[in-house]
Length: 490
Image (cartoon, rainbow, N blue to C red):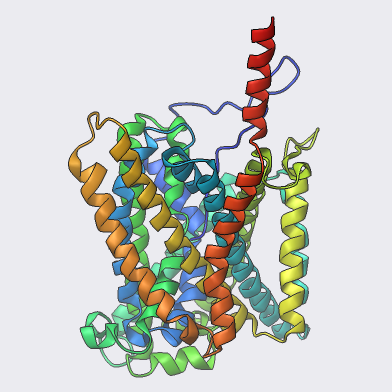
């Protein structure tokens, strides 16, 4: 969950500067799928978002939302991967919009993306702070959730400043362990027959439409944020025209099946009639208690430890995404120039890292002063905002794909890829956006003011980005014009 990599506009290599070229032809389908699933932090979704989706969404019917989201995203990915072959920077959503329209709409999309990933990153931090607070409480140390949150912000900020990444081998081991412990828990539930015997209640129309399905759909979409990062690996993939689409479809299907199966099993563990009460009683530890109940105390401890590592990896991943988004936008002249600076030694966007760390620290302190619950309010609200924004973001990309293929030659891409799939996914995303928008008030517990703030922040961020682009010039384009003028004068 919640990861997106960016292809950065780095200074061209010189005799004294190291090259930033990527190794081409090094990644196959399996490698790319593995990296996307690792970044999705699956245990974070199951341990963090699932209980909230059950409680605030449509109860026992919530697991079916993952299947619905996967179906919509599979259709969306057809146009996404098709256009990715046509543009120079297919990693970031705003590059699709800019290629199809103009710089103003591209920067507006970039600002919306910054809002999206800032919101989901803060949601991760809030939940991680709550989990660390629980762990420390078990050791006899009672502290508020925001204190460990700020400590993690500092650690992640230092790593981002130095551009230090976690070992890929360690991440691989953690991913395998996350998936393995979840599947062991699922197997235990199935073997023991759940609470009241196994059933398919989660997939019935009655369960699906119970509670507030719009909120359920919103939170389920959050679990897929980052699937689009497969297109970033295009320059490093073996036979990218076949590898990237396959990796994207496989990643969505694997993630969708894993979430749906795990969610269904956890509903069965507590019973369709008792799952909402279990989620309400202790959402932070519901999955941990499920593991203890159906596998044993060791499994509960394993889930707790792996949930912490999963959350930390997600926070670090989003930090790196955001620092690079801010860096890229600053290079286009729409954020302070200092944010575009790169550290002389580490070659990292260090100023952008400091800015992002400060942003999260301020959000944490504001929520702490306001007395917000880190899980039921901070995590839920900001996850909802991120999902609301990502759906709008994908709709903008869909429109960009449709515009692009109306104004460019079809080439070897068929009608389904160019027209039918983008229009179908736009309709699906539009329906999802309608239900999400009409349920924002329910998401925030009936607070109309908070719902309006969340709802208006997305279009407002697009408008601010559009205005910034309208009032500024692209420095890179200005440099090219200056160079051309010099040549002409010579």
